[in-house]
Image 1 (tube, rainbow, N blue to C red):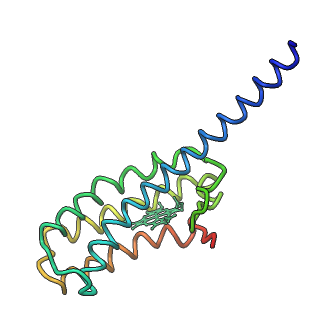
Image 2: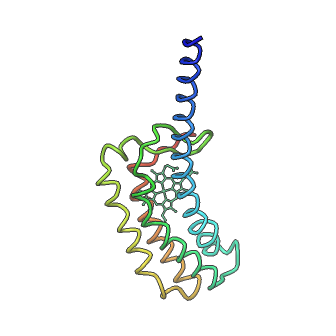
Image 3: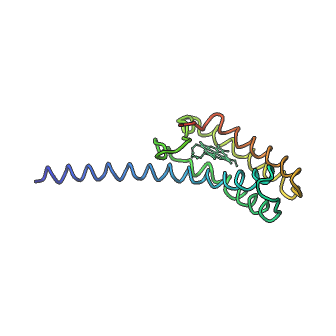
Length: 149
Ligand code: HEC
């Protein structure tokens, strides 16, 4: 009887640890998806003419990025040691092997956002802003993001 209780207890502990790590991976993925929403679903689509230029939407997207990007080092503080189920992208283990270098990619994104703030007036200036911000995002992805499928 005692033995059964112990086994069940261990199984439950194991299961909750797995759930916690999946939660961390999902939180990290959601942060990235949120930033992608601002940069790709709003700004990139406007630069391509897929949606009409809208100053208020540009300003909101930039404000969202401005708030979200500095939280990357904290949100990625813990290694979930697993990918989000069915995700297209995952984190390289290098993130946690070289966490200081990973974190050092963030200020360049913050600066790229600050540099274009207040300067975007039309599609042409938006294109310049998009390229500069996107290059700084990719500067981290090149080393630390893995394509899973
Ligand atoms: C300091 C590093 C770093 C920076 C800066 C960064 N990312 Fe990421 N990004 C990652 C890592 C690591 C992953 C893979 C893990 C994940 O998907 O959560 C990722 C994944 C993604 C994904 C794929 C999400 C999915 O699974 O579908 C998108 C989209 C994305 N990032 C967009 C952005 C955008 C847009 C920016 C810039 C505004 C940005 N990222 C800045 C590290 C970074």
